[in-house]
Length: 218
Image (cartoon, rainbow, N blue to C red):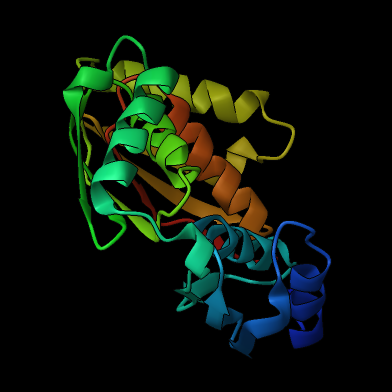
């Protein structure tokens, strides 16, 4: 069997430098056994997340430890109450029918989201909308997903999604559903395929938790 491709440090650094949405000048990169460690600082929470996604896209990378610090420029510093108001407005705009189920807490420009929703996409969109608020230093998403869907339906929906995907080899992945919690097992050819399988599972109705145990191997 062909061994898994080993990622190169230069490939990760080049991927960061080629992203027009981030300034990679102050980002440090270390690589060991397929795991990338990012250090240094950026000037927004969005850049921190983008750097992590860039590293994950590099062939052969199997894990990313994101230790990048967010250092906001002085011009972006805003009072917590102002950030909280804008965060609530952003969620209200994104989720007009479920925003009242979500609570926003802000301390030292760090936003914590609490509450319970029925669908995972609601949890995800709430976080994405808050990330875009100017002055936010970070987000902790503690929103719970409490759906009402039978486990067999969840399992069938995920397996069907795998079969439809051009990026996933459905024959190499097994799905277990225990209530609203899903466990994925098997092996895939790349980190990107592993991530796509997890995202496909999250998109299924009724999923509240995904335990991704898929291995990355050639």
